[in-house]
Image 1 (cartoon, rainbow, N blue to C red):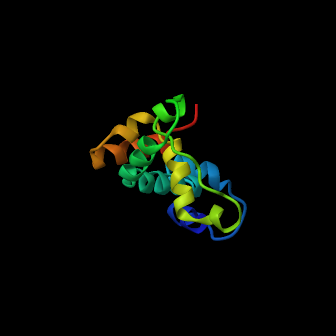
Image 2 (cartoon, rainbow, N blue to C red):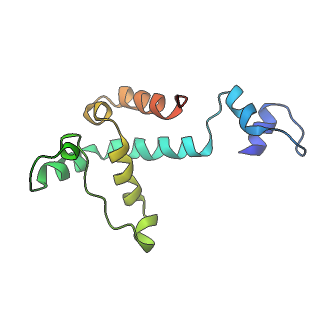
Length: 120
């Protein structure tokens, strides 16, 4: 990632440079932002599975259930590194507006704006 930022900014391959500031000025997303966007996109694609899981839960209607959240799976050991575990967390982080959106293009734009918007 750093080599790509240096190439785009026309900086030398070695030496001191504040790559975070340069990346922000060029509006290049960070690795964390790219990872979050990919996880949220994949979680949205599995929305029917999560919606069915939410509706199948027994018990009282809580605020979390009303927001479409599902129970987290076991996250110890190997299970914590599984993609399916990350997708459940991503689904729970999505706002209700995006969870309820059925148009793929609109949902992807909403996720992109959510992830890439500057934290205020």
